[in-house]
Amino acid sequence: MSNKFFSAPAYFVAGALLASATSLHSNSTANDPNRDEINQIVTTVAAAVSNQMIEAQENKQNEFLDALPDALNCESFGWMNTCNEINKQAKLNPSAPLRVLNKNGVEFNFVPGTPSAGIRFQLDPNEKNAQMFAKYISDTAGEYKKVTNYYSDELGLQGQLKNIRSIDQIRIDDNKKLDLPSDIVSVSAFIDSDCSECRVLVSNLKLLKNRHPKMQIGVYMVDNNKDAFDELVTQNGFKGKILTNAETDKVIARGVNEWPSLWLNNSKAGFRDIQTGAKTVSMLERSIIRVSKYDPKADREQN
Image 1 (tube, rainbow, N blue to C red):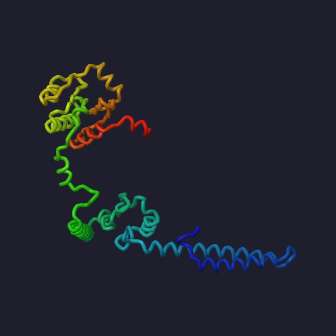
Image 2 (image 1 turned 45 degrees about the vertical axis):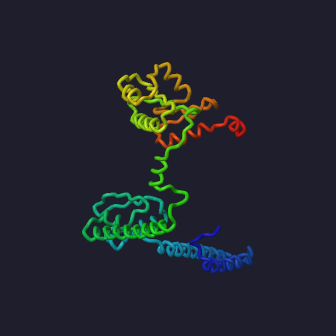
Image 3 (image 1 turned 120 degrees about the vertical axis):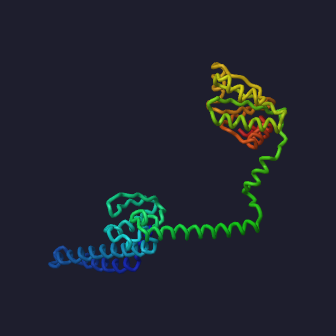
């Protein structure tokens, strides 16, 4: 496997020297009076070749690292004796945090990608470094603005992106009334009076009811709080009840184990979709339409 720090010319030179020494050793005999001297030559050459290859590899590595931007500007840290080594390790391990001490010995840890101007300002806070950090923030903001302007201009030329809905389009879609199959699907909501998400869901169910008056919606409370039931269920015009402990246990046994939970019931197809959490009106409408189209035969064939 190739090494990106490996120097091919150095390898060939070193290899030639080692090959010559090995040949000299193989041509000597056991009784050769110069064999010890030859062994010494081979050992020396092998060590020299190894050192040369290591040095070439280190030089190549240093050339590669020198081409990368510095994490620390060591000219600004005359008091930091380990600055160059920290810089080197930061380049060798770009995904590792940078741990350094300031001149007072206080340790700071910087996440990967922290700009050098920010590191310099944190380690040595003074007016000059503050100016450099402020300039960095201003310069990068200017570049981001430039990109944003180019993007906005191009978006204006292309019009709305085909696969991404804009916020305006989302609002239009959410306000678009859909025809719901209220004769096929009914909604059952299970709430707890101390659940903030439950109140959001009830509010959205009321909007759903206002948009689709024929939609059958039942709201069931799992805790015995009559005042909350009157506020959330009765006053909003929903049908429902406060469940007994036994009834709550039955609901839990059927797959409801957190609040709020929804049952979207397609009684004609014998299908029930269980959902949890607060849902927007448009999410509820799309789910109801999907459940109304459930085909048990197609589901059996697919499985």
